[in-house]
Length: 377
Image 1 (cartoon, helix red, strand yellow):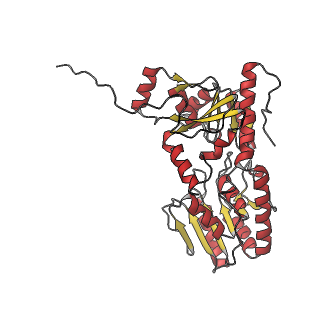
Image 2 (cartoon, rainbow, N blue to C red):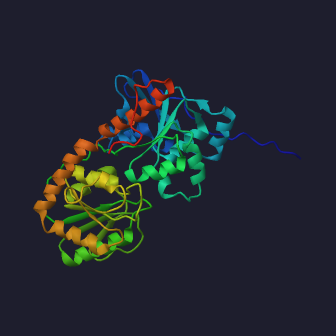
Image 3 (cartoon, one colour):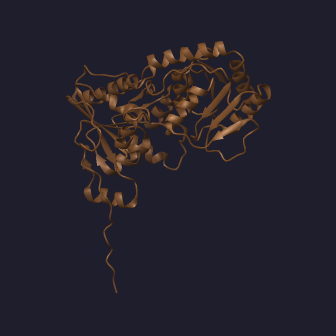
């Protein structure tokens, strides 16, 4: 007896550019859709932001692309499962009703390409330059070559990505920015506290824990806090916080006198978010010196940069700042001033909008609209 294969059942994505149930920024002549994976729940994020629970009205603050001459809306990307891939084949990828679609990273870009058609598409690239031999690298390169332009957050990523994509594929450098009203200055603490956070693939937990063990030996009264998913046993004196909300991370930055970040060598500046959050709170950072980090931290001004895989150097830098709170406070103030000037959500949005107008200007043949493909230095 033969069986008939049933049609998969799932909730289809909403209309091309989301309507009233998803956030919409101010509107004008240029229409931009920002494509977010559905699991980010932009509407829910915006609601939590109104309660001071998360930074930015939208993830990464991309609502700030909106202005009187530019409308910005959210495009919903359905889960990348078998049912939705079947829907995309049947629907033949509907056309997004926007001049330009932006995706934050290469993973979202791939999902967009499987679900929608865009008049023009620009995308950020985060992981690919550190994973050129990865399982999906070839597919990602092919997809990114179809973008009108790409951007990276680190100077060190630009040339490797350009080599992967080849000539004729503009690569811009955009400086990451954070919500400086959410991460706000806090009084420098009287008690010595060191905080570290982060779980991405390039965090060097072994070096961090070894360094904090040395800090405990030298400054036994210091409180040492690490937000991490590590399952290893921390050294004596170190407390691991498994999970923390955005507001919880903000409180831990404010509680600390020094924020430490240890990473393996990488090109995308792993730890930049934590470092900028710390500086915005008025705290100095001790961090691994990796390619591109100087675009975010200034050694001896708002941070101390140390060699990779060197727990002794990391510990020594942390101890120097703990023993000189006046210097640490001054460096934190310098960091806050830098973030306010160069690394806000608005400064990042301004750079992304320059990329967007360059894409649309190139399509329309308007030579007056341009953006430097080498990015801001």
